[in-house]
Length: 204
Image: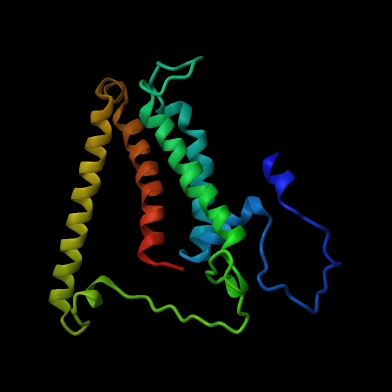
């Protein structure tokens, strides 16, 4: 209601097939997906991620075995469940919609609020691999492989500790879960956590 009252949305001229708008923005409820296209392959951002969101919402009754909080609000007894929702919906989804609405300009480039849009502005993003950041060239195959294995081991250890810390928040709740339920929970949770990490590692 606040959005509809405060934001002026006048009707524009009829669409012209010979003139493409720049920036061409999707409706606000799809701007989150359009923003994800900056950081991911179109197949991942347009197919895989929406599918995971739908299936993630479908499996909530299956993996949420906490009987506390049914019929009444409680933050103390459902910190992980409420915190996960707030992170996924507010921090991820709403923030991407806000970025797509107010910050993305011509060519879907980043323009801060109040900054003049420059239609001739061009930015060439160059992907940099982790071995390049540490000065390891592609000719050193063995060093590259060791670096890759080291980062992969470090990543797995960090993910393992993050899952352990999650389970420590309410051990009784996680003791009720089967191995299948806990595995499904961790797959969706780590995927959600990996989304902003991937976006921060490759700024648009």
